[in-house]
Amino acid sequence: MSATLGQLTSAALVLLASVLVALAPDAYLPMLVRAFLVPIIGSAIVLTVMAAWRRRWWLTGAASLGSLMMLAQVVTPSSIEDGPATIAQEGAALRVFHMNVLQPNTSYAQAIAQALQSEADIISVQEIDPRWAAELCTVLGSQYPFFHLEPRQNCYGIALFSKLPFEKVETLENAGAPFIEAWLNVGGGPIRLIAVHATSPISYGHFRRRNEQLQALGDLLSRGDTSTIVVGDLNTVPWDQAFRRFCTQAGLRSGAPSAHRTWPSIGPFAAIPLDHILVSEDLATSDFATVDIPGSDHRGLYAALHYR
Image (cartoon, rainbow, N blue to C red; front, side, top):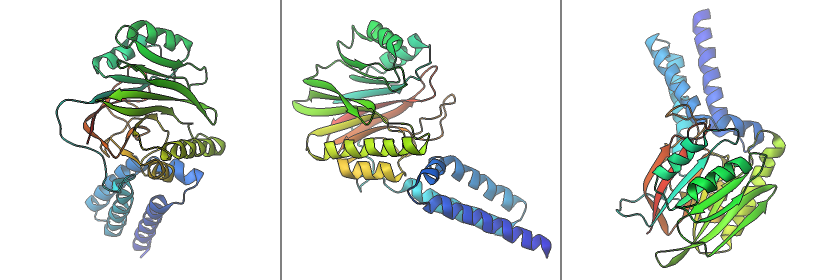
């Protein structure tokens, strides 16, 4: 009797924890837990297999049901209703490469070599200080003659390098963080590209600041109908309410597959998708990849974008 009661108690606790994770409100502490939803789901699946192997059927059922509830939060489209903007097409209209280099990282040559290897038209770089800025300009300057840099010492420095001339480029100060807005002519049409590094929600104050930044940027983008690309470390995941609100407000959707992960980077693996390439409805992705960035705690992103 006590063994059965213990199994029922374990199953109830697992199911309760799964419900709380899956249906947690849009608040600071639940957001931190839900950011790691994918590793939590993986743990629940392992628990399901182990419980089944030991013939603990109540626990097996609770863990499997919990896995399904949490999984539903990940696969639900988090932007425009028809899901990721992915198409099959040859010949990229615009190739974009993004990397958060991790400011203390001193693997300058190796990280920059990865960016060059992408042969992208646009390179977005984040967490640059004056030393990173100098290294980037020295190596990338000849192949990417159009650039705009905003180095900082607080891990929020940012840079944009382009093979295409900027029709206009400027730094936008957004609640204490610099974003770069660039206008380019691609295929005869204007494209607005914004490189973003939102505040990391390491405290409740930072959480509110990140949400304010995304809301302000969403408001800015909602006022125009120009083809738009947002690239960078948004410090939020696709199932976070802040991300969903931002995409809906700005009219953007993910150009990445739902399985992409960028942080923390451990070899070819990462746990959660903090870095994003988002596009307006008239743009689509024909190629996408995550890339190792030597010395960084983030994986980089590459996408080939087309007009629909």
